[in-house]
Length: 595
Image 1: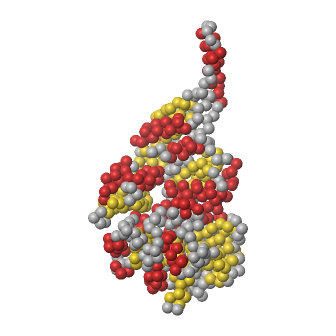
Image 2 (image 1 turned 30 degrees about the vertical axis):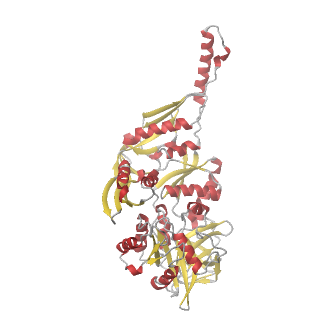
Image 3 (image 1 turned 90 degrees about the vertical axis):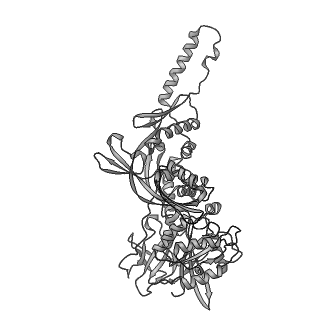
Protein backbone atom coordinates (compact mmCIF):
# COMPACT_ATOMS: atom_id res chain seq x y z
CA UNK A 1 0.00 0.00 0.00
CA UNK A 2 3.02 2.30 0.50
CA UNK A 3 3.36 2.40 -3.30
CA UNK A 4 -0.22 3.42 -4.19
CA UNK A 5 -1.16 7.02 -4.94
CA UNK A 6 -4.79 8.03 -5.58
CA UNK A 7 -5.24 11.54 -6.96
CA UNK A 8 -7.63 13.61 -9.06
CA UNK A 9 -7.25 16.66 -11.28
CA UNK A 10 -9.33 19.75 -10.47
CA UNK A 11 -9.53 23.02 -12.39
CA UNK A 12 -11.87 25.52 -14.01
CA UNK A 13 -13.44 24.58 -17.36
CA UNK A 14 -10.95 24.75 -20.26
CA UNK A 15 -7.74 25.06 -18.21
CA UNK A 16 -6.21 21.97 -19.82
CA UNK A 17 -7.00 19.09 -17.40
CA UNK A 18 -7.70 16.47 -20.06
CA UNK A 19 -4.65 17.41 -22.14
CA UNK A 20 -2.37 17.20 -19.12
CA UNK A 21 -3.91 13.81 -18.23
CA UNK A 22 -2.97 12.67 -21.78
CA UNK A 23 0.68 13.66 -21.15
CA UNK A 24 0.75 11.78 -17.82
CA UNK A 25 -0.56 8.64 -19.56
CA UNK A 26 2.07 8.98 -22.30
CA UNK A 27 4.98 9.59 -19.93
CA UNK A 28 4.10 6.59 -17.75
CA UNK A 29 3.69 4.52 -20.96
CA UNK A 30 0.20 3.46 -19.88
CA UNK A 31 -0.76 3.92 -23.50
CA UNK A 32 1.19 3.26 -26.70
CA UNK A 33 1.68 6.10 -29.16
CA UNK A 34 -0.47 4.15 -31.64
CA UNK A 35 -3.55 4.29 -29.36
CA UNK A 36 -2.95 7.90 -28.38
CA UNK A 37 -5.57 10.48 -29.28
CA UNK A 38 -6.32 13.92 -27.81
CA UNK A 39 -8.53 13.98 -24.69
CA UNK A 40 -8.15 10.23 -24.38
CA UNK A 41 -10.24 9.93 -21.20
CA UNK A 42 -13.23 11.80 -22.66
CA UNK A 43 -14.97 8.84 -24.23
CA UNK A 44 -18.36 10.37 -25.09
CA UNK A 45 -18.90 11.98 -28.49
CA UNK A 46 -20.50 15.03 -26.86
CA UNK A 47 -17.40 15.56 -24.69
CA UNK A 48 -15.13 15.58 -27.71
CA UNK A 49 -17.37 17.81 -29.80
CA UNK A 50 -17.81 20.41 -27.08
CA UNK A 51 -14.30 20.06 -25.68
CA UNK A 52 -15.62 19.64 -22.12
CA UNK A 53 -15.43 16.80 -19.61
CA UNK A 54 -18.86 15.67 -18.39
CA UNK A 55 -17.99 12.44 -16.56
CA UNK A 56 -15.14 11.70 -14.18
CA UNK A 57 -12.85 9.02 -15.63
CA UNK A 58 -10.61 6.71 -13.60
CA UNK A 59 -7.46 5.08 -15.01
CA UNK A 60 -4.49 3.29 -13.45
CA UNK A 61 -0.85 4.04 -14.35
CA UNK A 62 2.42 2.36 -13.38
CA UNK A 63 5.42 4.56 -12.63
CA UNK A 64 8.96 3.61 -11.65
CA UNK A 65 11.04 5.94 -9.48
CA UNK A 66 14.34 5.07 -7.74
CA UNK A 67 13.81 1.42 -8.72
CA UNK A 68 10.44 1.22 -6.95
CA UNK A 69 7.16 0.47 -8.75
CA UNK A 70 4.37 2.89 -7.94
CA UNK A 71 0.67 2.52 -8.87
CA UNK A 72 -1.11 5.77 -9.67
CA UNK A 73 -4.91 5.89 -9.80
CA UNK A 74 -5.84 9.08 -11.65
CA UNK A 75 -9.40 10.47 -11.80
CA UNK A 76 -9.95 13.24 -14.37
CA UNK A 77 -12.87 15.48 -13.35
CA UNK A 78 -15.17 17.98 -15.11
CA UNK A 79 -14.67 21.73 -14.63
CA UNK A 80 -18.10 23.21 -15.38
CA UNK A 81 -20.19 24.47 -12.44
CA UNK A 82 -23.09 22.15 -13.41
CA UNK A 83 -20.95 19.05 -12.86
CA UNK A 84 -19.46 19.88 -9.46
CA UNK A 85 -21.34 16.86 -8.05
CA UNK A 86 -19.14 14.59 -10.23
CA UNK A 87 -16.10 16.35 -8.77
CA UNK A 88 -17.25 15.82 -5.17
CA UNK A 89 -17.60 12.07 -5.87
CA UNK A 90 -14.15 11.76 -7.40
CA UNK A 91 -12.58 13.65 -4.50
CA UNK A 92 -14.06 11.11 -2.04
CA UNK A 93 -11.92 8.38 -3.62
CA UNK A 94 -8.59 10.28 -3.49
CA UNK A 95 -5.84 11.39 -1.10
CA UNK A 96 -4.38 14.13 -3.28
CA UNK A 97 -5.38 16.60 -6.00
CA UNK A 98 -3.54 18.36 -8.80
CA UNK A 99 -4.86 21.94 -8.87
CA UNK A 100 -4.39 23.19 -12.42
CA UNK A 101 -4.46 26.91 -13.20
CA UNK A 102 -4.17 28.39 -16.69
CA UNK A 103 -1.14 30.72 -16.75
CA UNK A 104 -2.88 33.05 -19.22
CA UNK A 105 -6.26 33.28 -17.44
CA UNK A 106 -5.39 33.02 -13.77
CA UNK A 107 -7.68 31.74 -11.02
CA UNK A 108 -11.35 31.47 -11.97
CA UNK A 109 -14.48 31.00 -9.84
CA UNK A 110 -14.82 27.26 -10.41
CA UNK A 111 -11.16 26.69 -9.47
CA UNK A 112 -11.91 28.15 -6.06
CA UNK A 113 -15.08 26.14 -5.42
CA UNK A 114 -13.52 22.82 -6.54
CA UNK A 115 -10.47 23.60 -4.43
CA UNK A 116 -12.65 24.09 -1.32
CA UNK A 117 -14.30 20.72 -1.99
CA UNK A 118 -10.84 19.11 -1.97
CA UNK A 119 -9.63 20.98 1.13
CA UNK A 120 -12.79 19.98 3.06
CA UNK A 121 -11.96 16.32 2.35
CA UNK A 122 -8.39 16.90 3.58
CA UNK A 123 -6.63 16.24 0.26
CA UNK A 124 -2.98 17.19 -0.34
CA UNK A 125 -2.99 19.92 -3.03
CA UNK A 126 -0.25 20.15 -5.68
CA UNK A 127 -0.55 23.49 -7.55
CA UNK A 128 0.36 23.40 -11.26
CA UNK A 129 0.70 26.36 -13.61
CA UNK A 130 -0.45 25.04 -17.00
CA UNK A 131 -0.20 26.46 -20.56
CA UNK A 132 3.23 28.02 -19.91
CA UNK A 133 3.97 27.82 -23.66
CA UNK A 134 1.27 30.38 -24.54
CA UNK A 135 2.48 33.87 -25.55
CA UNK A 136 -0.14 35.40 -23.19
CA UNK A 137 1.07 33.51 -20.11
CA UNK A 138 1.60 35.64 -16.96
CA UNK A 139 3.43 33.22 -14.64
CA UNK A 140 4.48 35.76 -11.98
CA UNK A 141 1.02 37.27 -11.56
CA UNK A 142 -0.78 33.92 -11.50
CA UNK A 143 1.77 32.45 -9.05
CA UNK A 144 0.95 35.28 -6.64
CA UNK A 145 -2.78 34.49 -6.99
CA UNK A 146 -2.16 30.80 -6.19
CA UNK A 147 -0.01 31.67 -3.16
CA UNK A 148 -2.76 34.01 -1.88
CA UNK A 149 -5.38 31.31 -2.40
CA UNK A 150 -3.75 28.25 -0.82
CA UNK A 151 -0.85 29.73 1.09
CA UNK A 152 1.86 27.50 -0.46
CA UNK A 153 5.49 28.44 -1.16
CA UNK A 154 6.50 29.69 -4.61
CA UNK A 155 8.83 26.72 -5.25
CA UNK A 156 5.95 24.28 -4.65
CA UNK A 157 4.15 25.53 -7.79
CA UNK A 158 5.08 23.41 -10.82
CA UNK A 159 5.22 25.20 -14.21
CA UNK A 160 3.89 22.86 -16.94
CA UNK A 161 2.40 22.66 -20.40
CA UNK A 162 0.01 19.92 -21.47
CA UNK A 163 0.76 20.64 -25.11
CA UNK A 164 4.56 20.48 -25.08
CA UNK A 165 4.96 18.12 -22.10
CA UNK A 166 6.95 20.63 -20.01
CA UNK A 167 7.04 19.77 -16.30
CA UNK A 168 5.26 16.40 -16.61
CA UNK A 169 8.20 14.51 -15.08
CA UNK A 170 8.28 16.95 -12.15
CA UNK A 171 4.54 16.42 -11.58
CA UNK A 172 5.01 12.62 -11.42
CA UNK A 173 7.85 13.01 -8.90
CA UNK A 174 5.75 15.43 -6.84
CA UNK A 175 2.87 12.92 -6.73
CA UNK A 176 5.18 10.27 -5.29
CA UNK A 177 6.71 12.70 -2.77
CA UNK A 178 3.73 14.79 -1.70
CA UNK A 179 0.55 12.74 -2.06
CA UNK A 180 0.09 10.50 1.01
CA UNK A 181 -0.47 6.79 0.41
CA UNK A 182 -3.89 5.36 1.38
CA UNK A 183 -4.29 4.53 5.08
CA UNK A 184 -6.09 1.23 5.36
CA UNK A 185 -5.99 -2.02 7.29
CA UNK A 186 -5.72 -5.16 5.15
CA UNK A 187 -6.79 -7.37 8.06
CA UNK A 188 -9.97 -5.43 8.89
CA UNK A 189 -13.36 -6.45 7.38
CA UNK A 190 -13.85 -5.29 3.77
CA UNK A 191 -15.10 -1.73 3.41
CA UNK A 192 -15.21 -0.18 -0.09
CA UNK A 193 -16.85 3.00 -1.40
CA UNK A 194 -18.73 3.02 -4.74
CA UNK A 195 -17.92 6.30 -6.49
CA UNK A 196 -19.32 5.62 -9.98
CA UNK A 197 -21.14 3.04 -12.07
CA UNK A 198 -21.78 2.34 -15.75
CA UNK A 199 -24.26 0.17 -17.62
CA UNK A 200 -23.07 -2.51 -20.01
CA UNK A 201 -25.78 -4.19 -22.06
CA UNK A 202 -23.99 -7.58 -21.93
CA UNK A 203 -22.56 -7.68 -18.40
CA UNK A 204 -25.11 -5.64 -16.47
CA UNK A 205 -24.03 -2.90 -14.12
CA UNK A 206 -20.34 -2.30 -13.46
CA UNK A 207 -19.61 -0.47 -10.20
CA UNK A 208 -16.33 1.43 -9.64
CA UNK A 209 -15.07 1.44 -6.06
CA UNK A 210 -12.15 2.30 -3.81
CA UNK A 211 -11.25 -0.12 -1.00
CA UNK A 212 -10.69 1.60 2.36
CA UNK A 213 -10.02 -1.52 4.45
CA UNK A 214 -9.73 -5.26 3.86
CA UNK A 215 -9.31 -7.48 0.80
CA UNK A 216 -11.78 -8.38 -1.97
CA UNK A 217 -11.27 -11.67 -3.82
CA UNK A 218 -12.92 -12.87 -6.99
CA UNK A 219 -15.95 -15.08 -6.20
CA UNK A 220 -16.56 -13.52 -2.75
CA UNK A 221 -20.14 -13.00 -1.56
CA UNK A 222 -20.48 -9.23 -1.23
CA UNK A 223 -23.17 -7.10 0.39
CA UNK A 224 -24.20 -3.57 -0.64
CA UNK A 225 -24.99 -1.97 2.73
CA UNK A 226 -27.33 0.80 1.57
CA UNK A 227 -29.68 -1.45 -0.40
CA UNK A 228 -29.04 -4.58 1.72
CA UNK A 229 -28.60 -6.78 -1.40
CA UNK A 230 -26.00 -9.56 -1.69
CA UNK A 231 -24.20 -10.61 -4.88
CA UNK A 232 -21.40 -12.80 -6.09
CA UNK A 233 -18.26 -10.94 -7.23
CA UNK A 234 -18.06 -12.63 -10.67
CA UNK A 235 -15.22 -10.44 -11.88
CA UNK A 236 -13.10 -7.78 -10.18
CA UNK A 237 -10.18 -5.87 -11.61
CA UNK A 238 -8.41 -2.57 -12.15
CA UNK A 239 -9.20 0.23 -14.57
CA UNK A 240 -6.43 0.49 -17.14
CA UNK A 241 -7.32 1.74 -20.62
CA UNK A 242 -9.45 -1.40 -20.82
CA UNK A 243 -10.69 -3.23 -17.71
CA UNK A 244 -8.08 -5.73 -16.49
CA UNK A 245 -9.39 -8.61 -14.34
CA UNK A 246 -7.50 -9.50 -11.13
CA UNK A 247 -8.06 -12.30 -8.62
CA UNK A 248 -7.90 -9.98 -5.57
CA UNK A 249 -7.69 -6.28 -4.65
CA UNK A 250 -6.33 -4.87 -1.38
CA UNK A 251 -6.99 -1.80 0.76
CA UNK A 252 -6.12 1.41 -1.13
CA UNK A 253 -6.88 -0.07 -4.57
CA UNK A 254 -9.34 1.45 -7.01
CA UNK A 255 -11.15 -1.06 -9.21
CA UNK A 256 -14.41 -2.34 -10.67
CA UNK A 257 -16.80 -5.16 -9.81
CA UNK A 258 -19.18 -7.03 -12.12
CA UNK A 259 -21.79 -9.10 -10.33
CA UNK A 260 -24.55 -9.52 -12.89
CA UNK A 261 -26.78 -6.76 -11.46
CA UNK A 262 -29.42 -5.90 -14.04
CA UNK A 263 -31.64 -3.50 -12.09
CA UNK A 264 -30.38 0.09 -12.00
CA UNK A 265 -32.03 0.82 -8.62
CA UNK A 266 -29.80 -1.70 -6.82
CA UNK A 267 -26.58 0.28 -7.22
CA UNK A 268 -26.32 3.59 -5.39
CA UNK A 269 -23.29 5.81 -5.75
CA UNK A 270 -21.88 6.45 -2.25
CA UNK A 271 -22.88 2.97 -1.05
CA UNK A 272 -20.48 0.73 0.91
CA UNK A 273 -19.48 -2.78 -0.23
CA UNK A 274 -18.62 -5.33 2.44
CA UNK A 275 -18.29 -9.14 2.69
CA UNK A 276 -21.36 -11.23 3.52
CA UNK A 277 -19.54 -13.43 6.14
CA UNK A 278 -17.35 -10.77 7.72
CA UNK A 279 -19.34 -7.52 7.63
CA UNK A 280 -18.00 -4.15 8.67
CA UNK A 281 -19.94 -2.43 11.45
CA UNK A 282 -20.58 1.02 10.02
CA UNK A 283 -20.87 2.20 6.41
CA UNK A 284 -18.57 4.85 4.96
CA UNK A 285 -20.07 8.31 5.32
CA UNK A 286 -21.08 8.87 1.69
CA UNK A 287 -21.14 12.29 0.11
CA UNK A 288 -24.11 14.60 0.46
CA UNK A 289 -27.26 13.90 -1.50
CA UNK A 290 -27.49 15.78 -4.74
CA UNK A 291 -29.62 18.93 -4.65
CA UNK A 292 -31.22 19.54 -8.05
CA UNK A 293 -31.44 23.22 -8.94
CA UNK A 294 -33.55 23.22 -12.10
CA UNK A 295 -36.72 21.22 -12.77
CA UNK A 296 -38.22 20.49 -16.17
CA UNK A 297 -40.58 17.94 -17.68
CA UNK A 298 -39.21 15.47 -20.23
CA UNK A 299 -41.82 13.80 -22.44
CA UNK A 300 -41.50 11.32 -25.32
CA UNK A 301 -42.62 12.79 -28.66
CA UNK A 302 -44.67 9.62 -29.19
CA UNK A 303 -46.62 8.68 -26.04
CA UNK A 304 -46.14 4.94 -26.76
CA UNK A 305 -42.40 5.33 -26.03
CA UNK A 306 -42.99 6.10 -22.33
CA UNK A 307 -41.74 2.73 -20.99
CA UNK A 308 -38.70 2.89 -23.24
CA UNK A 309 -37.94 6.40 -21.95
CA UNK A 310 -38.21 5.12 -18.36
CA UNK A 311 -35.60 2.41 -19.05
CA UNK A 312 -33.30 4.93 -20.74
CA UNK A 313 -33.58 7.31 -17.78
CA UNK A 314 -32.63 4.56 -15.29
CA UNK A 315 -29.57 3.64 -17.35
CA UNK A 316 -28.55 7.29 -17.59
CA UNK A 317 -28.98 7.74 -13.84
CA UNK A 318 -26.42 5.00 -13.22
CA UNK A 319 -23.85 6.93 -15.12
CA UNK A 320 -24.97 10.33 -13.86
CA UNK A 321 -26.04 10.11 -10.22
CA UNK A 322 -27.04 13.78 -10.15
CA UNK A 323 -30.10 13.16 -12.36
CA UNK A 324 -33.32 12.95 -10.32
CA UNK A 325 -36.71 12.10 -11.87
CA UNK A 326 -40.25 10.99 -11.10
CA UNK A 327 -43.21 10.22 -13.41
CA UNK A 328 -45.82 12.91 -14.12
CA UNK A 329 -48.52 13.46 -16.70
CA UNK A 330 -49.57 16.53 -18.64
CA UNK A 331 -52.83 17.21 -20.50
CA UNK A 332 -50.91 18.60 -23.48
CA UNK A 333 -48.04 16.10 -23.67
CA UNK A 334 -49.27 12.84 -22.13
CA UNK A 335 -47.04 10.80 -19.79
CA UNK A 336 -43.47 11.82 -19.03
CA UNK A 337 -41.05 12.62 -16.19
CA UNK A 338 -40.41 15.58 -13.93
CA UNK A 339 -36.62 15.75 -13.82
CA UNK A 340 -34.23 17.64 -11.53
CA UNK A 341 -30.96 18.90 -13.02
CA UNK A 342 -27.96 20.76 -11.62
CA UNK A 343 -28.21 23.52 -14.23
CA UNK A 344 -29.11 24.35 -17.81
CA UNK A 345 -25.99 22.78 -19.36
CA UNK A 346 -26.71 19.58 -17.43
CA UNK A 347 -30.27 19.60 -18.82
CA UNK A 348 -29.00 20.10 -22.38
CA UNK A 349 -26.47 17.28 -22.03
CA UNK A 350 -29.08 14.84 -20.63
CA UNK A 351 -31.39 15.63 -23.55
CA UNK A 352 -28.58 15.09 -26.03
CA UNK A 353 -27.45 11.84 -24.38
CA UNK A 354 -31.01 10.46 -24.45
CA UNK A 355 -31.05 11.14 -28.18
CA UNK A 356 -27.62 9.76 -28.97
CA UNK A 357 -27.21 6.82 -26.64
CA UNK A 358 -30.80 5.58 -26.53
CA UNK A 359 -32.36 7.02 -29.71
CA UNK A 360 -35.10 8.82 -27.72
CA UNK A 361 -36.45 12.10 -29.14
CA UNK A 362 -37.95 14.09 -26.27
CA UNK A 363 -39.84 17.33 -25.61
CA UNK A 364 -38.59 19.44 -22.70
CA UNK A 365 -40.91 21.88 -20.91
CA UNK A 366 -40.00 25.32 -19.57
CA UNK A 367 -37.42 24.84 -16.77
CA UNK A 368 -38.17 26.19 -13.28
CA UNK A 369 -36.85 25.90 -9.73
CA UNK A 370 -38.40 24.54 -6.54
CA UNK A 371 -40.63 26.95 -4.56
CA UNK A 372 -42.27 26.77 -1.13
CA UNK A 373 -45.89 27.96 -1.06
CA UNK A 374 -47.39 28.98 2.30
CA UNK A 375 -51.15 28.38 2.16
CA UNK A 376 -53.95 29.47 4.50
CA UNK A 377 -55.13 25.96 5.37
CA UNK A 378 -52.57 23.31 4.35
CA UNK A 379 -49.39 24.97 5.65
CA UNK A 380 -46.21 24.65 3.54
CA UNK A 381 -46.26 22.97 0.11
CA UNK A 382 -43.17 22.31 -2.02
CA UNK A 383 -43.84 23.25 -5.64
CA UNK A 384 -41.58 21.73 -8.33
CA UNK A 385 -44.12 22.08 -11.11
CA UNK A 386 -45.98 25.35 -11.86
CA UNK A 387 -49.25 23.37 -12.17
CA UNK A 388 -49.06 22.51 -8.42
CA UNK A 389 -49.06 26.16 -7.26
CA UNK A 390 -52.34 26.78 -5.32
CA UNK A 391 -54.80 29.47 -6.48
CA UNK A 392 -54.04 33.07 -5.38
CA UNK A 393 -57.02 33.13 -2.95
CA UNK A 394 -55.59 30.15 -1.00
CA UNK A 395 -52.04 31.53 -0.82
CA UNK A 396 -50.42 33.56 1.93
CA UNK A 397 -47.03 34.01 0.23
CA UNK A 398 -44.43 32.12 -1.85
CA UNK A 399 -40.72 31.71 -1.06
CA UNK A 400 -38.12 31.14 -3.75
CA UNK A 401 -34.52 29.90 -3.45
CA UNK A 402 -31.74 32.51 -3.43
CA UNK A 403 -28.09 31.95 -4.26
CA UNK A 404 -24.85 33.73 -3.53
CA UNK A 405 -23.01 34.11 -6.81
CA UNK A 406 -19.32 34.82 -7.11
CA UNK A 407 -18.25 36.33 -10.44
CA UNK A 408 -14.58 36.90 -11.23
CA UNK A 409 -13.86 39.16 -14.19
CA UNK A 410 -11.61 41.85 -15.66
CA UNK A 411 -12.18 45.35 -14.23
CA UNK A 412 -13.48 46.68 -17.60
CA UNK A 413 -16.63 44.56 -17.40
CA UNK A 414 -17.84 45.49 -13.91
CA UNK A 415 -20.50 47.89 -15.31
CA UNK A 416 -22.23 45.47 -17.69
CA UNK A 417 -22.21 42.69 -15.02
CA UNK A 418 -23.83 44.89 -12.36
CA UNK A 419 -26.48 46.01 -14.90
CA UNK A 420 -27.18 42.36 -15.82
CA UNK A 421 -27.52 41.28 -12.17
CA UNK A 422 -29.85 44.18 -11.29
CA UNK A 423 -32.03 43.27 -14.30
CA UNK A 424 -32.21 39.77 -12.81
CA UNK A 425 -33.47 41.13 -9.42
CA UNK A 426 -30.04 40.74 -7.82
CA UNK A 427 -28.35 42.82 -5.12
CA UNK A 428 -24.60 43.39 -4.97
CA UNK A 429 -23.04 42.35 -1.65
CA UNK A 430 -19.32 42.85 -2.14
CA UNK A 431 -16.68 43.85 -4.64
CA UNK A 432 -13.05 42.83 -4.09
CA UNK A 433 -10.09 43.67 -6.33
CA UNK A 434 -7.97 40.50 -6.40
CA UNK A 435 -5.28 42.26 -8.50
CA UNK A 436 -5.19 45.65 -10.24
CA UNK A 437 -7.27 44.28 -13.11
CA UNK A 438 -9.28 41.38 -11.64
CA UNK A 439 -12.42 41.85 -9.59
CA UNK A 440 -14.52 39.42 -7.62
CA UNK A 441 -18.17 40.50 -7.39
CA UNK A 442 -20.51 38.85 -4.89
CA UNK A 443 -24.25 39.01 -5.62
CA UNK A 444 -27.41 37.63 -4.09
CA UNK A 445 -29.75 36.50 -6.84
CA UNK A 446 -32.99 34.51 -7.12
CA UNK A 447 -32.07 31.10 -8.53
CA UNK A 448 -35.03 31.23 -10.96
CA UNK A 449 -33.41 34.17 -12.78
CA UNK A 450 -30.07 32.39 -13.07
CA UNK A 451 -31.19 29.03 -14.47
CA UNK A 452 -32.56 30.47 -17.65
CA UNK A 453 -29.99 32.28 -19.75
CA UNK A 454 -27.89 34.09 -17.15
CA UNK A 455 -24.65 32.26 -17.91
CA UNK A 456 -24.91 32.88 -21.67
CA UNK A 457 -25.59 36.57 -21.13
CA UNK A 458 -22.76 36.87 -18.63
CA UNK A 459 -20.35 35.35 -21.18
CA UNK A 460 -21.51 37.62 -24.02
CA UNK A 461 -21.44 40.78 -21.85
CA UNK A 462 -17.83 40.09 -20.84
CA UNK A 463 -16.53 38.66 -24.15
CA UNK A 464 -16.10 35.32 -22.38
CA UNK A 465 -13.86 36.69 -19.61
CA UNK A 466 -16.10 36.16 -16.60
CA UNK A 467 -16.25 33.00 -14.51
CA UNK A 468 -19.25 32.15 -12.40
CA UNK A 469 -19.88 29.97 -9.38
CA UNK A 470 -22.78 29.82 -6.95
CA UNK A 471 -24.23 28.11 -3.88
CA UNK A 472 -27.66 28.17 -2.25
CA UNK A 473 -28.10 30.46 0.76
CA UNK A 474 -31.77 29.86 1.59
CA UNK A 475 -35.22 31.09 0.62
CA UNK A 476 -36.84 34.53 0.58
CA UNK A 477 -40.41 35.72 0.17
CA UNK A 478 -41.16 37.13 -3.30
CA UNK A 479 -44.17 38.45 -5.23
CA UNK A 480 -44.57 35.40 -7.47
CA UNK A 481 -47.53 34.47 -9.64
CA UNK A 482 -48.42 31.56 -11.90
CA UNK A 483 -48.91 32.57 -15.52
CA UNK A 484 -50.97 30.23 -17.70
CA UNK A 485 -50.94 30.23 -21.48
CA UNK A 486 -54.30 29.33 -23.03
CA UNK A 487 -55.29 28.36 -26.56
CA UNK A 488 -59.03 28.86 -27.16
CA UNK A 489 -59.59 28.98 -23.38
CA UNK A 490 -57.78 25.64 -22.85
CA UNK A 491 -54.67 26.02 -20.62
CA UNK A 492 -51.48 24.43 -22.03
CA UNK A 493 -49.94 23.12 -18.78
CA UNK A 494 -46.52 22.54 -20.34
CA UNK A 495 -46.14 26.29 -20.96
CA UNK A 496 -47.20 27.43 -17.45
CA UNK A 497 -44.52 29.28 -15.51
CA UNK A 498 -44.07 30.81 -12.08
CA UNK A 499 -42.67 34.32 -12.52
CA UNK A 500 -42.26 37.60 -10.67
CA UNK A 501 -45.39 39.75 -10.75
CA UNK A 502 -43.58 42.81 -12.17
CA UNK A 503 -42.36 40.87 -15.20
CA UNK A 504 -45.57 38.94 -15.90
CA UNK A 505 -47.21 41.41 -18.28
CA UNK A 506 -44.14 41.86 -20.44
CA UNK A 507 -43.33 38.14 -20.59
CA UNK A 508 -46.97 37.16 -21.25
CA UNK A 509 -47.16 39.56 -24.19
CA UNK A 510 -43.90 38.26 -25.67
CA UNK A 511 -44.90 34.60 -25.35
CA UNK A 512 -48.25 35.28 -27.06
CA UNK A 513 -46.55 37.11 -29.94
CA UNK A 514 -44.02 34.27 -30.32
CA UNK A 515 -46.71 31.56 -30.32
CA UNK A 516 -48.69 33.50 -32.94
CA UNK A 517 -45.68 33.24 -35.26
CA UNK A 518 -45.13 29.52 -34.59
CA UNK A 519 -48.59 27.93 -34.45
CA UNK A 520 -49.81 27.16 -37.97
CA UNK A 521 -53.14 28.66 -39.11
CA UNK A 522 -56.19 26.41 -38.81
CA UNK A 523 -59.62 26.49 -40.48
CA UNK A 524 -60.90 28.39 -37.42
CA UNK A 525 -59.77 31.38 -35.36
CA UNK A 526 -57.39 30.65 -32.45
CA UNK A 527 -57.16 32.92 -29.40
CA UNK A 528 -53.80 32.84 -27.56
CA UNK A 529 -54.06 34.30 -24.06
CA UNK A 530 -51.73 34.74 -21.09
CA UNK A 531 -53.58 34.77 -17.79
CA UNK A 532 -52.85 35.14 -14.08
CA UNK A 533 -55.67 33.37 -12.25
CA UNK A 534 -58.86 34.57 -13.96
CA UNK A 535 -57.33 37.80 -15.28
CA UNK A 536 -56.15 37.78 -18.90
CA UNK A 537 -53.05 39.97 -19.24
CA UNK A 538 -52.19 39.51 -22.93
CA UNK A 539 -53.92 38.24 -26.05
CA UNK A 540 -53.07 37.53 -29.69
CA UNK A 541 -55.42 36.08 -32.30
CA UNK A 542 -54.51 33.79 -35.19
CA UNK A 543 -57.10 34.41 -37.90
CA UNK A 544 -58.75 31.49 -39.68
CA UNK A 545 -57.77 30.26 -43.13
CA UNK A 546 -60.77 31.15 -45.27
CA UNK A 547 -61.95 29.78 -48.55
CA UNK A 548 -63.51 32.36 -50.83
CA UNK A 549 -67.04 30.91 -50.87
CA UNK A 550 -68.46 33.85 -52.80
CA UNK A 551 -66.15 33.32 -55.80
CA UNK A 552 -68.95 31.72 -57.84
CA UNK A 553 -71.29 34.72 -57.35
CA UNK A 554 -70.78 37.43 -59.87
CA UNK A 555 -73.54 40.03 -59.95
CA UNK A 556 -76.94 39.22 -58.53
CA UNK A 557 -78.43 40.22 -55.21
CA UNK A 558 -76.22 40.72 -52.06
CA UNK A 559 -78.42 38.22 -50.19
CA UNK A 560 -76.90 35.36 -52.25
CA UNK A 561 -73.41 36.24 -50.95
CA UNK A 562 -74.71 36.84 -47.42
CA UNK A 563 -76.32 33.36 -47.38
CA UNK A 564 -73.03 31.67 -48.36
CA UNK A 565 -71.00 33.70 -45.82
CA UNK A 566 -73.49 32.91 -43.01
CA UNK A 567 -73.24 29.21 -43.88
CA UNK A 568 -69.42 29.39 -43.72
CA UNK A 569 -69.58 31.25 -40.39
CA UNK A 570 -71.72 28.49 -38.85
CA UNK A 571 -69.30 25.83 -40.07
CA UNK A 572 -66.33 27.72 -38.58
CA UNK A 573 -68.14 28.05 -35.24
CA UNK A 574 -68.87 24.32 -35.11
CA UNK A 575 -65.27 23.53 -36.09
CA UNK A 576 -63.94 25.74 -33.31
CA UNK A 577 -65.88 23.66 -30.75
CA UNK A 578 -64.57 20.38 -32.14
CA UNK A 579 -61.13 21.32 -33.46
CA UNK A 580 -58.07 21.11 -31.22
CA UNK A 581 -54.80 22.95 -31.73
CA UNK A 582 -51.52 21.05 -32.03
CA UNK A 583 -48.63 22.99 -30.51
CA UNK A 584 -45.45 22.25 -32.53
CA UNK A 585 -42.23 21.20 -30.73
CA UNK A 586 -40.52 24.39 -31.96
CA UNK A 587 -42.99 26.47 -29.91
CA UNK A 588 -41.91 24.84 -26.62
CA UNK A 589 -38.26 25.44 -27.49
CA UNK A 590 -38.82 29.04 -28.64
CA UNK A 591 -40.39 30.03 -25.32
CA UNK A 592 -37.12 29.01 -23.63
CA UNK A 593 -35.11 31.27 -25.93
CA UNK A 594 -37.31 34.37 -25.79
CA UNK A 595 -34.47 36.80 -25.24
